Image (cartoon, rainbow, N blue to C red; front, top):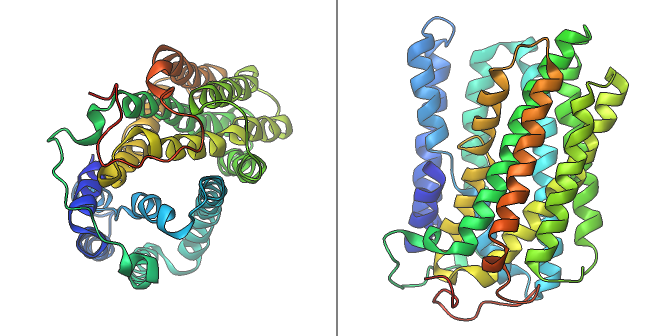
Length: 348
């Protein structure tokens, strides 16, 4: 649960402290992993890896805070968020492939050392960017619970937690399908196909203005995400499995874009980084994906359809949470700006 803590630190003290501190700590942890030779000391390596993950710099939350200062128009900002989500998918596709290639050529030690160096360099570049240098936190007192006490944020977090379960379960589905069909390549191609779908859906969604409130848009997108996850339950042949994995991806980036964009009207500006970090934690490896991987991992590897049922169940859970809490999301029309530093009515 590191992201919300670092997000709060960013909201209160700015980028230099939050990102500088966590990037140095994360770099040190990766360098320690490289010197440990993880295969020889698995337990200690697991502890150090957990420390590295806990200290991951809150760059996504930091970007979300900066977008209103870089892009003034709310609709243009939604397009920028779509571009942001797509850029992350490129990282998720290219990063593992780069690691696999370097590991085959140079070994794990150099890969971990390179990861530490690239992460530190990326944080340095981010901190040196003009928008980062000029942004200043708002000196406003915050409730000790932070933005998570806002019902609308909890609704979004629940929806993204369900989506995270789907993503984590689909990774297990990919492994199980590879074993069942004797096609090991599916373990990487299915997640890559999901990312390709997100790369496609993000620009298509972000390039135009969609009717309805954020609540209605989220319900539509959540329904599409659920429907898109169902074909994997049929345990399709390898070629069809790759095509089926694209379908939920088409709705993943729009779900993220709409969720993050809705924060402008759900939470106070001085808590935006922490609110964004909560969404990231619920979707990502901190909660949602970890839960999906664990639940689907309980299913025998010979039953990829059952693991796919966990994926569909996560999408259904997210949609049900959106339906149950939609009144907390219907606070303002799409694209409206949050001007006050205090939460909206209904957030107490």
